[in-house]
Amino acid sequence: MTWLLPRLIGTERAMDLLISGRTIDADEALEFGLVSRVTEPGEVLTAATAYARDLAASCSPASMAIIKHQVLTDQDASYEQAMRRAYRAMAVLPRGRTSARASTASPAAPAQVPAAARRPRPRGHHRHRHPARDIDPMNP
Image 1: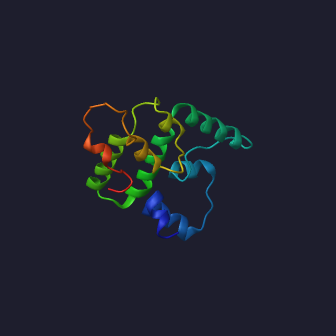
Image 2: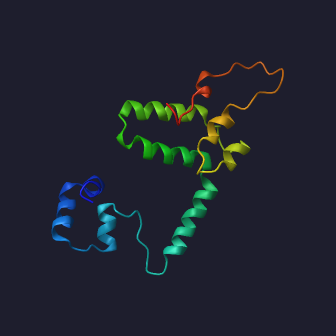
Image 3: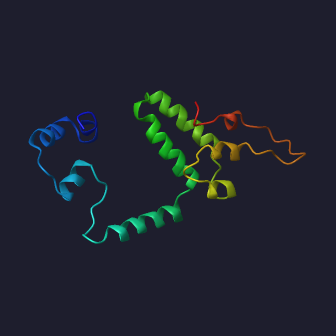
């Protein structure tokens, strides 16, 4: 807790909570950034379901998987490393939700995205390959 809490809410607030041992309510947890939303009692499941439906309807599963991976991977990376990975990820993601593989990719399996971007072109297709498409954003 002494390692994590200051990174989440800052040293001053962490010291206050850890030394005092006091309990905080939902509004204070929201103010500290420990939670992202507060709902009325009994409305948590309804709010969580609405949020999940909104994500499913409006966000690419492949994009969500890569964003999740980047956020978790880049926490201790330098700015340059994080930007390099972000540009590589953008280079291999299919544009929009038109790709069947992009719209059905599992968020739990982000490694499927680069494979979808490298699928073979039809015979006789002479378009030049973009070198960035051969980069795996998960392994810089």
